[in-house]
Length: 97
Image 1 (cartoon, rainbow, N blue to C red):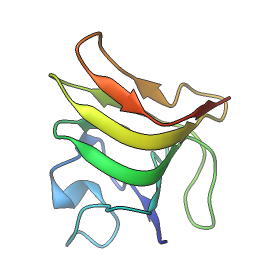
Image 2 (cartoon, rainbow, N blue to C red; image 1 turned 135 degrees about the vertical axis):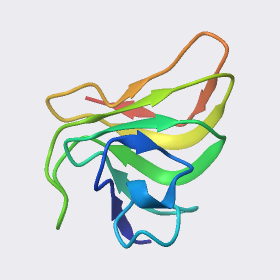
Image 3 (tube, rainbow, N blue to C red; image 1 turned 90 degrees about the vertical axis):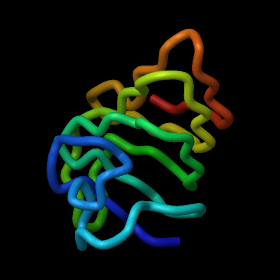
Image 4 (cartoon, helix red, strand yellow; image 1 turned 90 degrees about the horizontal axis):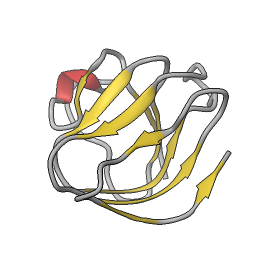
């Protein structure tokens, strides 16, 4: 399990949105918004989505869903909303905060 975090506001599918700029978060990763807004524009499966601080990531930001998507993750909110999801999408996981 790796800690992954956004380094810019942008689409989930853009590697430039993520630390390292070379890969997308994957199954088992703890993913932090890190004060940015990340638009989930594809189906995703990760360990957690978080707006809490991490080892490197700052608290804040948000994840939003565009289109019809399946998000498989536990969502852990800090002081900001963690995940904004529309009626046509599915969240598989638990929510905290």
